[in-house]
Length: 334
Image 1 (cartoon, one colour):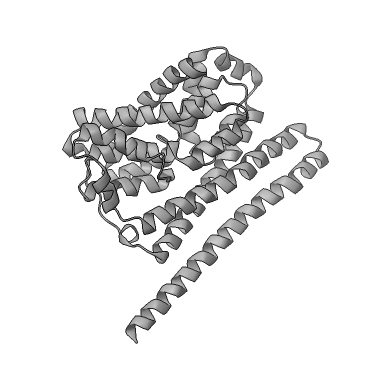
Image 2 (cartoon, helix red, strand yellow):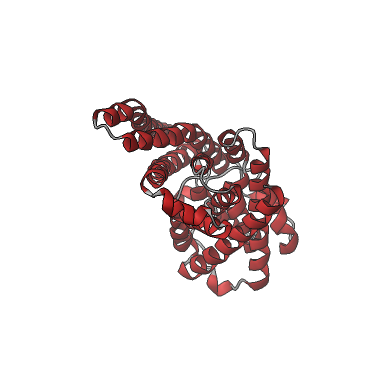
């Protein structure tokens, strides 16, 4: 009798979670629909062509990004709920020097968004995975997984070099950061994370909970990022952009900083980067490489999970490595 009651409670909570996910998706769809249908009409009524341009950019980024955002969060939640963590520990070599590139490459086959990668890395460390390998996976999973690469190929049609450049630069940055931590990292910088009930759970309830959290959380950042990118395209004068676009180094640094501030989910950031057409391919590559590894929400998540001392040092070093990797790969491929 008690087991039946437990199963009924689990089904009830699962259905409630699915309803909340559906409501969140419906709300996001309403925002996109309003932007697509009412935005241009409102702009015409107000006789403001810049507003019409803003709505066009915002709608294009959001409409293109939502399907990949949803697919990425579904896959991420499924991995977190149904793939045992012992799989990671068995596949990784014991030597940190060898485990780092293996963990980095694992990001290409185990999709996860930025929000999910931090707790996953924490749980791997708790299960005995070398911190250097777990941190390499933390950086690579949201940057080079199949969902992100497919989204990049659609955002940059006919430009396979951009997809290859993103893969190479992101993987290189993740592996280099793992090796740097293995060589220079100190135990006192890394606070061991506590295992929450949500991370410890598994099965359908954990899947629904993870999907609900990741989709609603990342969806909000997608909308905000699309609005910020549209505003950036419309508000910033062309003369100001010319100052940066005229210099290869300044344009790279500007978009690398912009990636930190916008906090766009990696499943959708390619569409934001594609909209920044005034910048060089290398600068847009820097936006794609830096964003999934260092942004404001990730810094906050890392500080809460591993401690402030870790987040400050790791984020600063990752930003420098990601920018350097983007420049070198961009010079080579783009």
